[in-house]
Image (tube, rainbow, N blue to C red; front, side, top):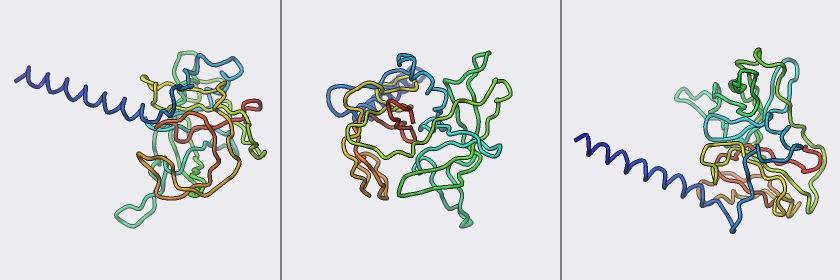
Length: 233
């Protein structure tokens, strides 16, 4: 019986691993995948890593700074949607969810950790969610993480971009991955349209204002920032 259970466990593991890798690989379009581990990025891009964290174990968020003694971050609405409970009360899926900034560590090598305190603003047709976050162990750091700056400029054709997040494709250990120097990662069309989700595996049920770019992405990159390659905004 023990041998049978062991064999069953091996079969389940193999099936799960195959399902996981199949799901990850199915997002790759074309022969090349341009994302690499953040530690292999250029020195100028290394500063970005401490601002990008993980939501739970399945999505990305990025820190945008402190206002009125509150800490703020951004992710997608579909990562942190509003729900209605059995008492007909509205709550958010991410209330109390843990977050980790794995690449911002203190002198003991511990990553910055925290929680999503609330989701005070959702803009569904932008797939946008503003998060108020708390840091559990910030007292063991010299400062809060560096924040990413939001751009007030419009996108332009052939604008070179950077993409980074925790997407699972070619990312066995759940690392922060970056695409910073590929030709494809650029704005391909500035035509902003309200469109259906092009995801064929798990599409959203609502339309989102979108422009076309060629940066690599896979499951887990939801909520990750797309940055101008020169300004890092």
